[in-house]
Length: 279
Image (cartoon, rainbow, N blue to C red; front, side, top):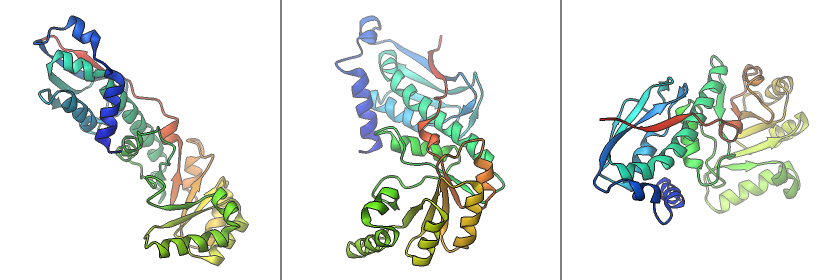
């Protein structure tokens, strides 16, 4: 599903048979102006998405922007101004806010996490823990907040997690079967494998055949030990149970990546409003 198709589905879900609230009390020929206002401090994201929503509803709606995605905003700031058919702007209002509030919340949260690892080599990753059909928008918001996208889905990178390993018959068999599958199907995908303890790290390093080793639910002390075993041969990623309070400790180990599912599934939407302008 393309981003535009997702937007069209969101509009169809909201509008249904018609925006009867606007149709019932707003004359068809009335034009007006509205402003998107920040009601909280944060990082704005989703302005282009809002533009797409408005253009789908009514290509004649005009937008004047005062901010761009990634800008820091303060409570009371005007993000953009739109003008055109009042009926159509009101029809688009909630869909615009639903996308932008969530995207801006993700960008704001990501920015807070990124600041905590500044000065280290570690890059902050998102995960696949996203809202169904909203992955494109949520991962875009992570980038706007300064984070790095992990794989988009099941199709663009191999991730051998604990269940894959156990069902395949162990670490070595999982790696060998995966490499053969990629070769047989001419798929140039990178392989990441999850490890649950230092012994599994040693087995992966001894066997080889991967690009990145995930250190799942390791303590910072265990991460340091694992990095000594890996010795720079593979990219490394810490994951599992890492919070804002412990993030810096993990980054200071020298691990290449830290993945944080909370960036997309435990965030608070940023408070925004789209309001009538008296002209």
